[in-house]
Image 1 (cartoon, rainbow, N blue to C red):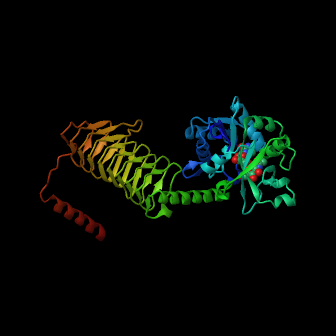
Image 2 (cartoon, rainbow, N blue to C red):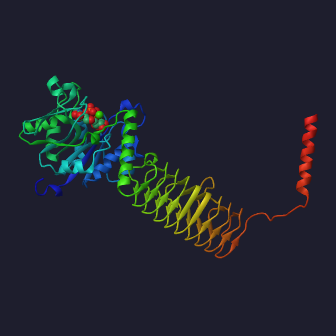
Image 3 (tube, protein in one colour):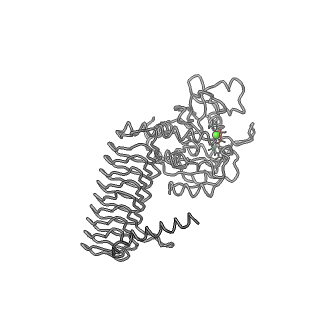
Length: 455
Ligand code: UD1
Ligand code: CA
């Protein structure tokens, strides 16, 4: 690394226009998920690790869907359209207008290659050759492009498998597809690419050879083959998922998180778990979950878009949906579903409950079978419950409704009006007892049945 290399301006171009025909899917390949996040999201996350000033995603097949997904994943990434997929070099050329005025280093990534590590990318970006290719020693070089190097290891050119002779095919050093080059060099040489090759495509891989012939320096940075794993079929997608999960489980254990049965826990790309958290068996993390240190998730829970503070306990068999926010020492027990609701410190929701669009004050107890009736068929409404309240079992809270601090509701109540602070809200029929009636009803029913049986 030469002085000043770390401070240079970086732009990332993510190629994501291909159809992925081997996926046999209506969904563009890069939108298939690994770790609950579309593959293009993994490329965007890797790109972000370089702190770039621009990210451009080249979309083509299913561009409308890809554009939407990218906007959701990274609001600052731009889209360049490649309406016809004429090759990787042509794809990069479509990103050049979005790089207008950019004078730094451009890193090209693929949207279907989710495992390139941040450290590898940093190495690549820091290299001072004019064009740098990320290569790897392939166990089975198969149909990868081959990296032809000089005696001193510098890159001479890349030869695509289809265009390679026997001697070149014997090379095991392969092209990952990831490349770094100065913006000016890319502009100059993408304009010079031809398509006179076995595929009739404009190959990005011709650039190192062309640049070298013009006196520029080309180099190779290598990485582990595992990082370059690309996804082309459903089988490879499943394999990528398995690899992702295996890694995340190992990382979690190494970070000081207890996983009772690691092989049964499923992580998302953005799952954050603090040290000393305990995660039981068969827990599934969807996107957007943060579990602070010391929280505990018991078996068979499904969590998505939620936050658990220190000391919170969840499950077994609980479902936390987006917007569930659990304060310190909050307890959510079995068969409880929580959506878009804040539970302040020490709230207890032990059993069989649905809380949606609610705010629950500190140390309030929610009885078994409580439901916030938040949806009227058209609109959603809020339920506000104060601190230290006691919601009786089987309370229906018909929103919008408020229950004040330290208030109670009687079991089985249908609460349609606000309950003031310190008050008891009762919304159920008064009980009456009819002496002897149970016995008489039973006898009448038995008589009916024996009549039927003898008829
Ligand atoms: C490419 C490389 C090859 C390398 C291999 C690694 C070229 C010419 N070859 O081959 O050296 O070993 O990747 O996996 O670059 N794409 C577009 N627009 C296009 C064509 C491709 O966006 O017009 C995207 C695809 O969606 C994909 C990526 O670029 O994400 C790679 O394209 P693909 O056709 O899979 O290239 P390979 O033949 O695998
Ligand atoms: Ca490929």
